[in-house]
Length: 73
Image 1: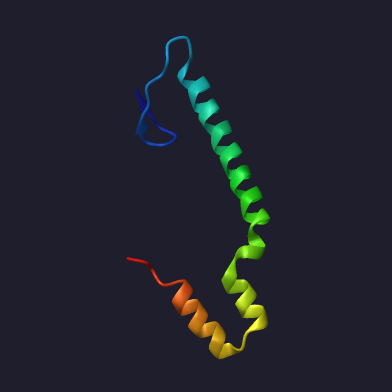
Image 2: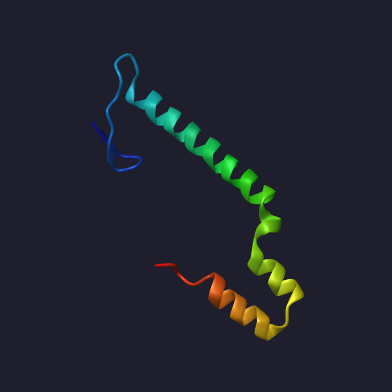
């Protein structure tokens, strides 16, 4: 069955309607978003770039951002 909400092929377990499955998926996504927000808030102090921006000079900030935000290969 094709799900119009997420544009993916979704198999619907027996005994459940397509709408129930979509609702369960939406609830799970909301739970995951909330969990991510909690983790981001919990570990916000560990984000190095904002701390360096507050405490460092302009030159230090530029160097730190370029080093820390560079895409790792």
